[in-house]
Length: 202
Image 1 (cartoon, rainbow, N blue to C red):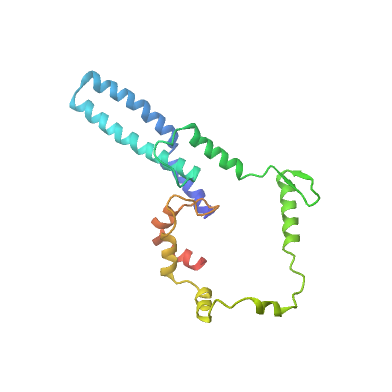
Image 2: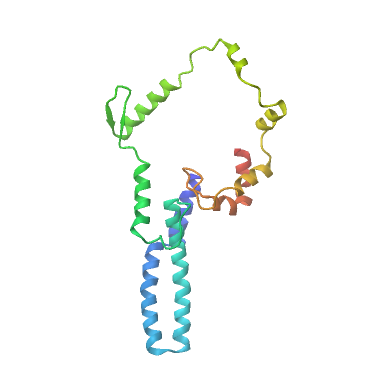
């Protein structure tokens, strides 16, 4: 997925270019084309204006798609795209995803990525220390048996291709699937290409 992401980024730069720059270029062109059409008012000037509007709308749509993915907001509505609030959401989300300081087991504040990672590893090693022995199995008899053997077999069964496909198509189209950054739309549209890899992974 990382290799694919790099390849798509490179392809996007080569074939599509800077979308935000293109939006600015086409918005400036539209002002020019509107002035020409107002002055000349000919079929040709109107045709050029219509073609320009179609191109501008295409680039604006691509810009909107990028901003939606960056904000990862399911409740996004048209019109929020160019507000200060919308862009602040993107900045705030980036800030929230980064730890600047953390308290260690002694209660001291620690800074720096390397020191923070050591504190986190120490914390979870201590928390998930599974060296102790559990001997009192009679305690388990107090837990009611709610799941039948058939239920258990279903829960433990490896899902077939149809179930995996249903899971993929139940994903939200505009939400990111995880750290790879590929959203539901990617998985739905490319399922025929990546199906075997996904089934093998599951």
